[in-house]
Image (cartoon, rainbow, N blue to C red; front, side):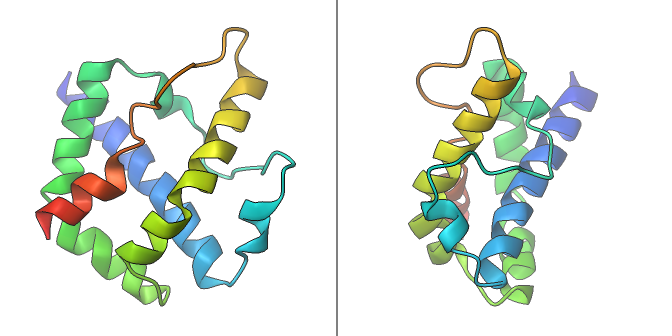
Length: 121
């Protein structure tokens, strides 16, 4: 279980990094487009169990200061992530729908990640 938790946390952080890179490059308009955004980072981590995702988010929360430092290298902060998180999640949902026969309904298991990180700072 520890391995799956670590891999899930890694992919969650890459998902966050992909958004940070997009925002840092000033490509906000991609989030406003209704077409499905082609993501570079696979969303396979979103299919993990609720328990694995919860553990992965706790693992990332313990490293919140380091994640925020990575965001700063792109000229953005956690507030920028939170302000753009809803459309980012919308595109993540669309990406998952295109991959799955039975799309995930309801909240994505990592949807509260920025909120959890903010609470640790």
